[in-house]
Image (cartoon, rainbow, N blue to C red; front, side, top):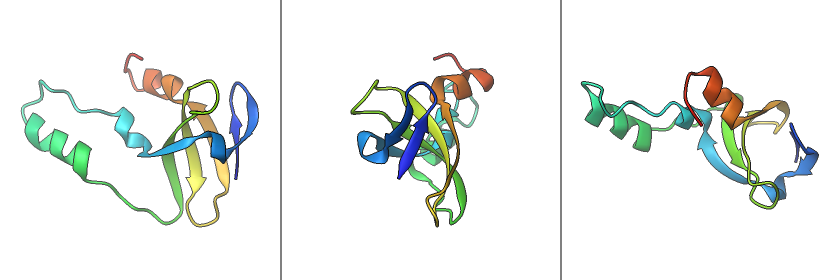
Length: 95
């Protein structure tokens, strides 16, 4: 599977480490009233979708960047690759 890195171009997926759901970027606030429940859900509850899914990938054998990859889990087709820092900034998180 090839991942089209936004800065480096097409790279083999063997250069990357898969982390999981890209919603990990949306870490809950420790100041929230339901912080304990929110952090439990964040840390332990994951979806296992069939079809299109946004995932976090780490370019371990390259520039060590984090990417958000929109990938079909059934066909491995990749629709979009973004730098995770840009996605976090769009959501109002600092990097």
